[in-house]
Amino acid sequence: MASGKNPDTKLSHTAAMILQAVDAGFVYGFSIMEMTGLPSGTVYPAMRRLERDDLIRSQWEKQSIADAEQRPPRKYYKLTAAGRTTLENSRKRYPLLERLIPSDEARTT
Amino acid sequence: MKHSATPLVQLPALIFNLGLLAGAWLIVPAGGRTDWWREWRAELWQARNEYAYEQRFSWSSECAIASFCLGAYQDAVCLRRLHRHTRTARPVHFGAAWQCILILATLLGASYALMHVLPGVRAKQQLSHLETRSGLVLIKYTNNEDSLPTISSGQYRAWKDQKQEFFDGFAFYRITKENVSWDQLDRSRDSAGWGVARASSNFFTLLGVPVQFESSAETMAPDIPSLVLSERAWRTEFGANPEIVGSKVRLGSLAARIVGVLPEGTLGLPGNVDAWLLEPDSKAVPGRAGYVVAHLSASGRSRMQSGSIQITSYAPHRTPDDLLGTSIDRDFPSSRAVFLFAILLAFLALPAITSVSVSDYSVSLHEISWARRVYRWAFLVAKIALVLPTVYFGAVDIGYGFTGLDTIHAMYAQLAFSLFGCLFGLSWALSDQRRRCPVCLERVAHPARVGQFSRTFLAWSGTELMCTGGHTLLHVPALPTSWFSTQRWMFLDPSWKFLFADPVQD
Figure 1 (cartoon, helix red, strand yellow):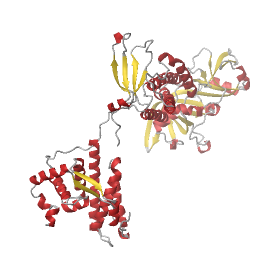
Figure 2 (cartoon, chains in turn blue, purple; figure 1 turned 180 degrees about the horizontal axis):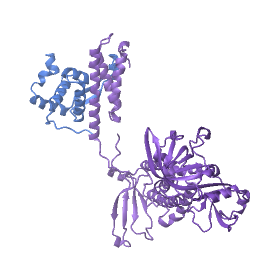
Figure 3 (tube, chains in turn green, brown; figure 1 turned 90 degrees about the horizontal axis):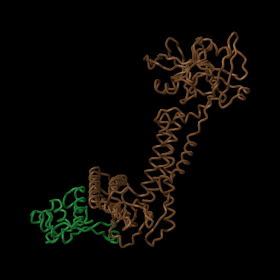
Figure 4 (cartoon, chains in turn blue, orange; figure 1 turned 180 degrees about the vertical axis):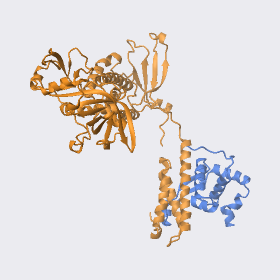
């Protein structure tokens, strides 16, 4: 049963970092780990809670894409609308968040 | 699916990593395991691809990968917690048919196991191995009680030495209280007040009773009398040590050697005996009264009437003595026969204490399938099939294991417990059956009083119970009337479904 989280709810810094990483394009567990520097025992449980709160949503990669790259298919995560609003609020709370994990656009410019 | 192959040198490490993940996989709730495993396999591939060197083994990189895999345990625990919190709390209801069968099977197993643990019950089981020869009688004076020793050793010797018409063997014993001492583990031990039966050396041969751990006479010094311990004394005083056979003990001032152990059980002879001291007749103290056991000859057996034989003993210069030989053959019914008798009584008495009907009276047009009907009857039969042996084992446990009664009283105790056990067990099986939903066999619950008892003849009054699965509603009248004499089932149609929670999947 999903318990939708109020977008105004304050996230912990770790959860906000993970949300920021997903928004920045690091969309599977290991890449989020690499980007944030957090251990696997922190990242994956945090992602389970974010998914439970409907802030992120997961989706399996297509088998054909994984086969083409000769690796197992990944489980990708992306922000939901509620997740995006929560992230916006978290950025105000943690101003260094965007500098720690620059978003896609910031990195390309 | 084609992945890049793992180099052979890294294969053991990969297997170790997968083993770690498999351990965590067990913690993950059953419903999400496939998805979880698939994700972590993909992540492990990514981690190995990132950390491990292609063609060589590196401890530092393997440690990093193992550390990554250990994170799976925290993830699994988190999933388990989330699952527990999101699960709908289901009311605890111990009413399913399988739970009933499981509880009955557990009770049956417990009562059966108890039978093998309780010493009294084991003694009862061993009693069949302790059967004495047939045709044995205990001789006493006509006017004396069974329990009093009346025959002197001199009289016994005189009978033994004379040619007898009715008997072909005699044995004598008398019971004394003795202080017994022995050496055990380099320590001297003693025990006061043993009941020691000083018996003639042919005692066990005449009775035809086997002695456990019996040592051969050749290995024993002939000048020391032999001592046969009762199983109770062997267990309590010697810790059931079979090595004790052959060792010496002192009975007061007399030395004796233990030659065997008599299996537990009653011989059917008077006296409470801890040990049997076998001594030659020449050493028997003359004049002391004891008991005489005799074996009937063919002629004697023909004179037996109702388990006893009248004997007249003639001796020179004495008036003839009138004696009575009472059979010590024990002919008790077996515990199974007692139980079968109890079942018969219980079936006869059952209609007096409960209704034996389990029929369905339905107030709605709903036909239960034949398969369901068979299942329902099979459940009733299974319950009875589990209840009856449980009662049997339980009654034997109580009769022989706890009461400390002698055989005949224990048998009556077993009969009483068997009768009440069968009666109430069968009564429970039937009443439980009447309270089970005909569709799912779960016990109906949530009783609700409906109507007023004082208005029974004006409106319906009774109790309604509901199947938690949402199949049926049971109406039980408070007072059986001509128009509502027995309970009735109402089968609920699908429109009721919204009232019942869906079963929760783990």
